[in-house]
Each structure stands twice: as structure tokens, then as C-alpha cells.
Length: 167
Image 1 (cartoon, rainbow, N blue to C red):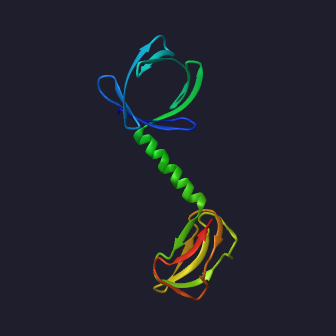
Image 2: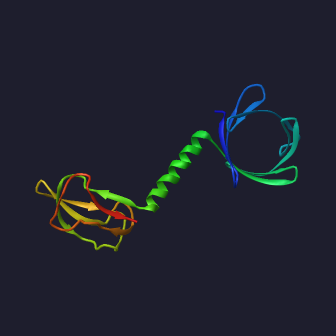
């Protein structure tokens, strides 16, 4: 496991440690060396330049490092952990951006229990869809404000037709 992603406030670096004191940073190969001076102090040499680095804080994957007098804050994860974090952020964004609810099967809108613009809680019944002589509750998958387009009681809908949106 020699692949990492490091992020500062402004930049993202994809790092692969290679053999023979080489590292790939964002697909550029760089020769490096590290000399440990103490448990928190190191001399890092990159491209024939040396940097005195002092680790000020090391909490899980977050580091504060003093490099030649400049403070750098770095968040570092394995490549897999970084991808997992990005997927979680995307899921959170999609939930906060809204969600479209489509008809799970063809049927008739028997009853709409909420009004357009009303607030709905996650799991709350929004409407009843009658299909094959059975009443199916269509529930809100997330909380938010509900918006109907042209859906009204008594109309027939096909599978995957947009029923409502929650924002």
C-alpha cells in the first residue's frame, strides 16, 4: 500500500512511492531522501534542495508540519480511503441537493397525502399508488420540501414516471 492522497487548503497531490528513493507526485517522478533527526524532526531532500521539517501535530491522517519556518496543514489518506471519502461526500451532496422519486410500478394515484411545497420527514407517506388492486404507500426517502409536477389523484402512471421531488 504505497499510494496516498494528500490535500492542503489549495492543492491535491496523488503520491505513489516507487523504488530507489523515487516518488511519483501527480504523475511526475521525483528523487527524494529523508533523514530522521529526532522523533518529530526530519531533513527532506527533493531535487537537490533540503528542507527542515518538524511535525507539530499528527492526529489520525491530519498533519501540521513546519517546513523551513512555514506552517503547512496536510490531510493524508490512502488512495482507497480517499475514494471512499469522496463517495460519501457525493452521497451527502445528492441528499442535500434533492431527490426525485419515481413510480416503482405502473398504477393509479389513489391519494396524495401532502401538498406541493409542504415539508416532509424521511419515511413519511406521501401518496398511495394503487397497482394490481393493492394500495402501495410511496414514502419520502429523505426529509425536505416536496414538489409535485403534474401528478394528481386519479391519474394513471407508468413505471419510472417522476412522481415528486424532495429538496
